[in-house]
Image (cartoon, rainbow, N blue to C red):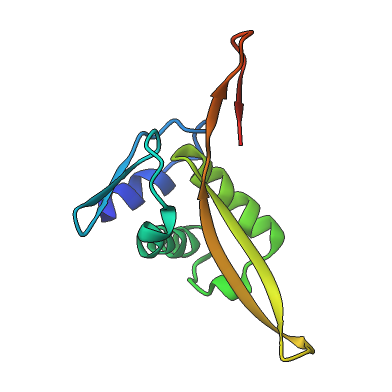
Length: 120
């Protein structure tokens, strides 16, 4: 698994969906062309995110990431087909206390009738 992490972050980000990956958690496989629920693989994707934080920012405190940090991480996640989704929620109405909510969404590839490809 660490080799996969290293290959993702060793070089500048690649093109969207350029890494074709298959993930396996408890014999449930994920491949981006099959529509499995990514929450099953949440822990693996979170490990990728944390590894990326260490490689790119020298820490793994996801709560400390800025918008530009998330954008950079997103460019790497695009290469293997996931969007990093996040929101900061107030804790008990306290505008100073924020809690990070983090999830992942597969990028879907759609081929249009004119041959163009769009990603969502």
